[in-house]
Length: 114
Length: 109
Image (cartoon, rainbow over all chains, first blue to last red; front, side, top):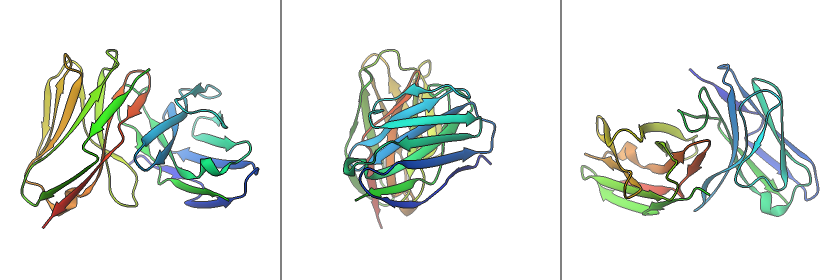
């Protein structure tokens, strides 16, 4: 079974804080993704990575950055958290590139920015 | 860029009836069309997918149909059961996945 874990289920931060969300997968997948999920908007891609130290912007990268130093770990960074970044954040990994096959999701981190 | 519209946003059906959710898209380059199910408080999980060289795929009570000419694809659930209650997301894929807005399906006993 593919296992994708995220560092926190719930997180509360203050405006202006630097926030790190961590994601780890144990199936040696090349491809990893960060999405945010908001009601009525579905899942929107923030960043993705198809190899260690490689990253690509998704559809809504503004205000975020990512780090992938090791194959199994993909981190999402909010440089200066703002209230409009309050959301559910989902990490995913896949064996094939995004357009090629199943993505396995983590449990999500619900981030609240006060 | 890619865009996918999903309808309806909510759907309520009687147990045993069928449910149909439809997605339309604009990017002709899309060649992968998955459907994900997200139960309350849980992570999205793939339930069925189809590729552009296939028009229909079925897995027990679930089927997906694809019309590439008209750029739409649909999820069909037959003989619905209470455990089918969830939010369903379609997506289109080429280099990346673009998700629809989601459909909240409620099965009434």
